[in-house]
Each structure stands twice: as C-alpha cells, then as structure tokens.
Image (cartoon, rainbow over all chains, first blue to last red; front, side, top):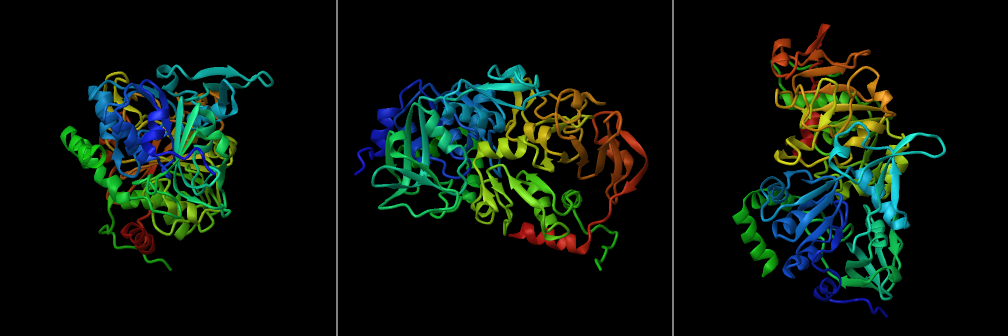
Length: 268
Length: 255
C-alpha cells in the first residue's frame, strides 16, 4: 500500500520552502499546473524557478511574485507569442525584479542529464559563436582530454524540489507516464525532493509504448490530481487546451486583468 | 498537369513564402521542424512532393505525421502518429548533436548579412527594449543540422546591419569563419522571405538576393533591407504557387 500519497496542500507545504530552487517540468505535455497553483496559494517567495520552457505555468508564478530568478531556455507562449508576465518582470521589474539564467534547450537537457547522473557537469557541442556565454556564467569552454576538440561544459541541475505530472501511479506508489516524456525522468532523479501529481491510481500498469516508469523509492510524494496538467494535457486522458493558451495572451498582457484572473481561478 | 495560376497573383506574400519553403524540402529529407511557418511548410511538402520526408519535432517526436497542423511542438497529434518518441535529452544528443538531421528550419526576429540570427532580445540585454522568448533549440539546430533554411518577413526591422544578440550562428563573420568555429553543419543555405529568396555567396557567405517573388522588384527588397544588399547578376522570379500548392496549403490552414 502506498504510504507516500498525500494531499496536494500537504505535499507542497512539506517540500517547497521560501528561497528553494524548484523545477516544475513537462515539455508542453504533462505540465504540473495544479501544483504551481498550490505553491502560489501558499505564498512561497524568493524561488529560483527552473524549467526549459517557462510556459504559462511560470508566467503565472512570476506574475504572482513567487520568483526571484528563472533558469530557462525558451520563454514564449507556444504557438501564440510572448509570456507577458515574464516580459513585464524582465523589462519593468513587476511585481519584482527577475534575474535570468539563460541557456539553449540542448544545454538545459545536458544539465538535467548531468544532474540525474550525479555528475558535476555535462558536455555538449553548443553555444560556440553565440552571445549566450557573454551573459550566462554557467557556460564554459572545455577541451576533450582525448581528442583536443573544443566543447562546452554546463553545470548539473540539482534543484531542491522537482515536481512533475504523470498519468498513473500504482498502489505501491510507482509512477508511469507516456507520450511526450520530455525531461521528467531527469527532473525527478536530479532533484533532492520530488513530488508527482497523477491523473489516477491504478491496481496495475498496462504497458504503453515509450512509457517511463519511476519507482516509488525515488519519489517523495504522490498526489492524486485529475486534470492537474490543464491547460497542458495528459496523453490518453485529455487534449492540450490550445484555446486557453490563446486566451491567456490578453489576460496576461495587463497587470489588472492578470490579477483578477488569478484571484478568481487560483486564489479562491 | 498542375495548372498555373493567372499572374494577377491569387496568393498572399505569406503563402508564397510558405510554398517556397516547402519546395526546399526534397523527398526523404530528415527535417527538424519548429512551430509556425516551418511546420506548415514541412507538412505541405509531405502532402505534395515529399511524402517520405521525416518530420522531427524537438519535443521528441521523430517521423511525426500530424493529421492537422499542431499548435505547439508538443501537441498530442504529433506523438500519436510518430515513428518513435524519445526524451528531450535523447533528441538533442543522439539525434541532433550526432548529425542525424539533414535540414533545420529557423525563423528569427533579426538577421544580419551573414545569416546570424537573434531571437533573444531587442536592445540592451540587461535593460531590454523588447525581451523575446530566447534560444530554445535554435543554436544547436543552426550548428548541427546538415543545412539550415531560414524563413522570416522582410523589413528594415528584421534585416539589420548589426544584431543586438547572436542567438544562433549562421556564417558568423563570413568566409570560412563558421568552419573555424568548429560548427559541423553547412549552415544557412537559403533565406526565404515574403519578398524573395537570398542565398549566401559561395566564398564570402554574404547573403545575396537570387530571386524575387512575382510582383516584387529588386528595389523593394533593397528598401526593406537594413544594409547595402548584394544582388545576383541575374535575379530570377520565384515560380508562382500552383493551384495544387495553394489548395493543399489552404486546406491545411483551414482546420
């Protein structure tokens, strides 16, 4: 029987503290929105937020004042345009200044792999000739000790807390996700503490092509949270709410409409 | 036989840009596809002359065959019909970095004469005029794909003398600079805009106007370029989109 299943409120309050480095991952698919909303409701502050694509989930957390720093690689509203709350924080320090640590997708993926592997850094062919190393101090040139080839090193990501959403957990607390699996396995393995929200708990897993299974003993808390990825989606449970992503643009463009949307849909 | 359109231009400038981008993909090509115009162009090619094109989306979908145009790079429709789904670290390391992708499609907010691209910031990095989404997959797509095709609308705001930020390297400072940096792919081979097509000079790598779209003259392209544009000796006219190209494109966009 699972002894790590908690309520969302309990899980967030047990694991997420002010000043933590927190990653809520999910590449377009399986983005843990419900967990983010709980962090916002609990009023966490000074978080360093880590995510390849900040997406609407971090636009909301940044606009709500949870973040002091963002580590990321692509900060747009996918298929729509800009993230206006993120842009307002960067350009006009509203509601507070936001420090950026900016990478490419390949660099972030490498950092996640290094973190999951327990290595201090990862290597890739990347960033050469771009302006990114001038502004991001977590990018360094390195030479291959065997061939002399010039490569790039990026440090491991090891957040205090990693949070993901998955389709299923079984009664022992093992977790299975499938479809586009992104960097979720790396996020859980690299983080010091981890929370997984799931669509449902099942008696036994049915095999899926491309499934990622995370054993119970690498997860700190499992939370049953059907629909917890909306407006992102859970493959075989829901579809991406593309209309919401488009509707977010005018909501987030203005500070007042953003605040009233958050009051109505997240805070109450 | 494909019927050609009447030259009174039954297409928009965005449509000819998309059609011309789709023509750049030959059958069997393995193509790294971003959302927006690149995805539309690649799916158009797959429905017309390149049915065996392998579409790769950075979310981990290899051999995607979407029945409708996806709204994001991670829509379920991309995963459902893909040959294989891989994790994001695997996508960027085993597939892109290892050199398994023939063509990468990129857009940008700014481009310079050597086809270097900016998608990060307009103005000063620490005090930006406009903060843009940033790098995403672009720097390594630009570095590691066999070749890169760039699509963007032509204007003095986008075609600039000096980039505010180099997000992705095209031909760097020209000549063999790209090779000297150690970048493995050949770099940009075409820039397709709503006014015409530019290609890098074989030696200097400076972008050169090689064709204008029907109804566009060379001076119009010069006026929309923020540097003294190099123009080929004999500029051709881009082939007008055929009836079937336009029909399939419009059907794709209508869903």
